[in-house]
Every structure is written in C-alpha cells, then in structure tokens.
Image: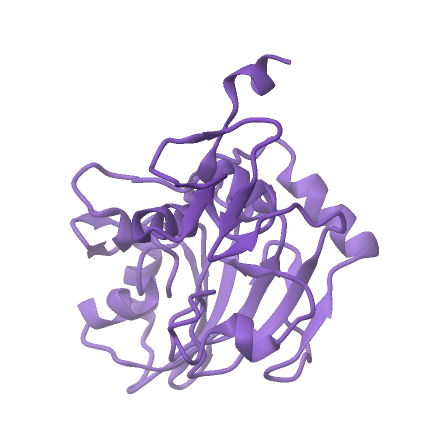
Length: 259
C-alpha cells in the first residue's frame, strides 16, 4: 500500500514492465518519447495505479511471461532497442514479444548477449558492483606474451581509474581468454591498447553460468530449466539498483558495458 501511495518512478516502471532498461528509459524520457496519461513524462515522475504510460506512442504494459534469451550477436549489430539505429539488435532478431538487451557488446564484437523483458534481471546481472563473471576470447595483432597477460590480470589504468584484477589465459599464439567482473566502455580493447596491442576479434562466450556453446551466429535460445534455476540462485543477494557511476570522476557512459 505504501508503494502505491508513493507511486513508482517512471524509469523503474518501464524497466519492471520489460519495456527497456532504466538507463534507456532515462534517455527516452529526455527525448520526450514517454507519456504518463496525456502528459509528456519528465525525469523523476512517478506512476500511480490507474495511470496509463505510453512509450514511443505505444501503451506500456507488463508482459506476463518472463523471457530470457541467450543470443549469439554477430559483428555489425548494435546492442540497442533504438529504432533509429538500422542495425539494432531488436529488429535484427525480430522476436515476437518486446525484449531488450541486458548489457552491451560493441558493434564490432560478437558472442553471448542476454535479452529479456525482466528489468530486475538486467540490473542484477550487469551491475558492476555485483562482480558477476563475464568471459571473452580475444585475438590480437601480435604475439601474446606472459608479461602482457600478467599485466592485464593485475589491473590497467584506463578511463581515469584502474581496472579490477581479472583472470587471463593464453589459448594461442595471438589469442587469449579473459574473465572480467566489471564492464567499462570498450574495456578489453582499451586494456590491450594500453600495452600497444590491437584487438582483431573479440567474442563473449559466458555470462555467469550461461555459456554461448555451439549456438550459431545470429541465433538465440531460451534460457529455462536448470540453467535458469542456477542463474536465479547465483543472483540471490545481488543488488538490482540501476547501474550508476562507479566513480564521480568518470562520465556514466564510460561505465556502460561495451567490451
């Protein structure tokens, strides 16, 4: 009753309804594409029982079915629901119900991307403070040395801060595996560039217990059964707060996951 009397913040309402992430909701509110009843929504507005919320001209209603997909994102596809981006992942998949990406991979990266209509899942999985593992296979433009891998694992000064310690393993002459627990903008590429390496290819192969496996590029599968149950167990105790600044010195955009 108390929450009903106070209402729900508009960005949280849209996220909980599976329309978009809270961050994307903030962007759309600022762009003027969200309405509450017949009024254009503003940042901080609240939704009360009986209110009608419209997102980009469509009534925003919560989907009863929880959807969680593992997607093998190809290169060239952009992890956004923004329709003005012609290569956006939502149009590319053409899934019959409204879903949006949980976190990001940059346009030239490929591999595992989670897509969902569950706002809390997005925040719990991708919030850097929860320190959930994400694993990548990386190919670079020259020989991977032991000293390079040790330096990556120990933390690298990028974007005004030090990256967290991480796990690295050589898997080929010019390729390695890296496991991160944070998601700074183009983090792996920036870490490599610091040591004068250039990333040639980057593929995410795991998020927590969800593995890409042999899922073909451009295809998706439902996450259900024991796999979903294990994920839910791993998320117990995780914060579902919207991903925010990790440092007041760094612009929020730099912390969006976009390896």
